[in-house]
Amino acid sequence: MKIIGPIIEYASLSRFLLVLTKLTRAGIPLIDALTISGDIVDNVVLKNKLENIINAINQGQNLTYALTKENLLNNIALQMIAAGEEAGNLDEMLKNASDYYKNQFDVLVDGLGDAIEPIMMGFISGMVLLLALGIFMPMWDMAKAAKS
Image (tube, rainbow, N blue to C red):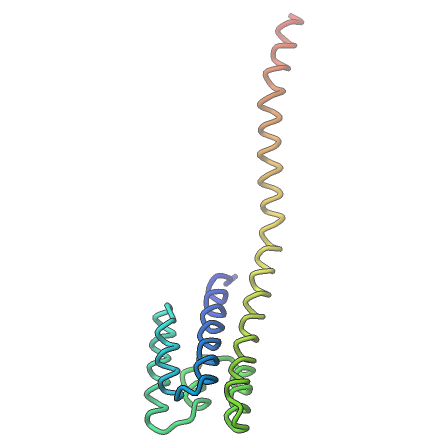
């Protein structure tokens, strides 16, 4: 079951899209905003995809096409960004896409916590059992020795 990979991916994409949103809202040109946003990304695979996206936009492609070509975002986020590009409201749709990835991240982290909880309860119960046996076993041995 893949858990850690999607968590890292969703966190990286959410952070990237949030920075891109802030930069486009500030009026920074898209190419510059993508370059700056790419600088905050730690994931090497994501950085390479962003470089390809920047190159595609420099060659005249629109953002949605470049994102689709690099398979960076899922269809829901791509449709949001495409709608934002067509309506001239890209910054708002980038924010919505960032929120979408943040929500996906939160769902995965909450699910991970729910999955770990029973395991931790079992581990703690085992430790308490060992502690109790460590206390009572010598007492029982002493009681047996006193009887004989």
